[in-house]
Length: 198
Image (cartoon, rainbow, N blue to C red; front, side, top):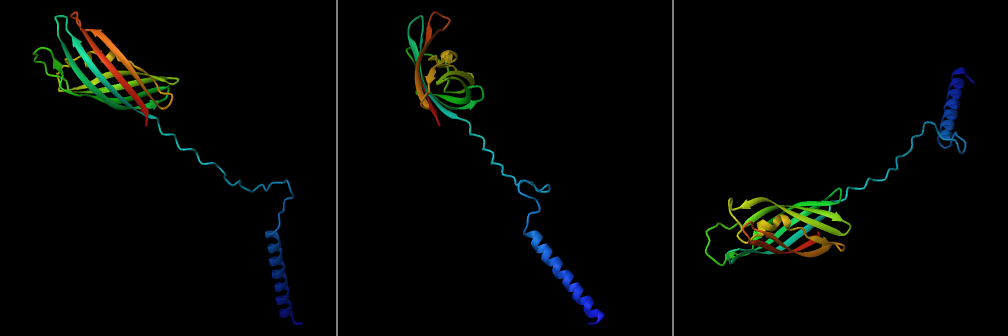
């Protein structure tokens, strides 16, 4: 056998041996059972992070019938409907805004020239304790500007603090409030409030 033929035969033999070795190595594990591959990287198996829960939103509605009894005699009345929404915050409170609108023209037993308030923008705060929410109302805006509520809703607003039981995601309460008018008369409002989880 000539020398060039021997060289070719040996090169083919080495190539065949290297190929077989590579094939066998790719099919075997060089580490015995229980020994980890130091170069292996764990496959991440993280669970998807939960999306933040949407905050609770409560719808609030209140009907208020108000009366201003004057010391000299006679009275003025006004009826209001309040509608708004409250959002739950951390710490067990609810906060939101509402609009109070005059339901029908205010009426008095006597002639008067005051411009009657027709709409109020309110801030509403609720404090949640267990299954009960205590609401408070605060006037923020008034329309028309410079107007007065002859019936007394505005005069009693800061004293309206109903406690509503919302154990089933809804609740209702009634509160009657009477405050002096500063001239031996009084303002009274009868308030029916509802809270509903939306």
